Length: 299
Image (spheres, one colour):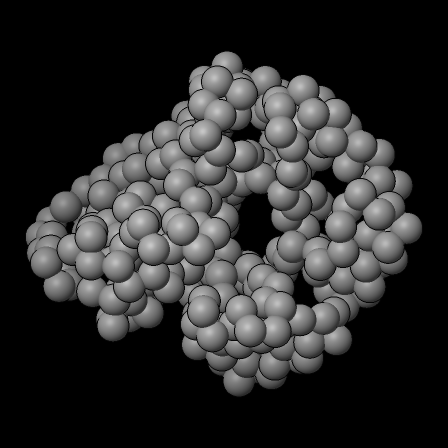
């Protein structure tokens, strides 16, 4: 089981502890030294106050934050979990992500999703109602642009004719793209356009708020993976996309957590993402060491 750890770039209340360059350097190096497989960050460039008051959070710009993690490390994966492509012109996303992949020597994994916060779309001048179509368009566009060949294409608000984007990403044929979301549409996107699928746990009552299907148990996830396999067969895909999931059990309960990891592995989950809660950087580093002690025997 591969493990990626969330960098606490949402902790704008404690900049020096968690959001400074020194903090990202130290935390990323520690994840690598602990034998874990990567770090991830999320994406909220313009959250509205109502969402923040209800438990939402700020975040650093994901590719900039991951560039600091890249500079501090040699081998771990650098994962956007997730990156809302519809917030950005697709060729700007292509250039930004390719740059990060080049500078990290090919360690980027691009986790994407359609997004769900209407006010954030409005603040950024993006079309909320067409977010799924814009994500499909963006994945197709960056994939074409990343070949390094002359590219022509267009969509709402952009028109590229005989455009070439270099350097192309370090990874061939492209950095892995993982599509997030529990809905049939999101899963179809993962099967047709992507390399991986990022389902996420949605406790009862949460699925409506984040506009996706409910996954409240490992059995729920098992059933969704069954649907994923059906979609693979329907669309002529031979291999199931890589699956990355956030366990529902607290990692601090090592017995329960290990039991869930075994269940997740049995149903085909190959990667897990883990958020570590801490009030100080020192506590965070200690917690990552404890997490590594729990998960290393499962790898």
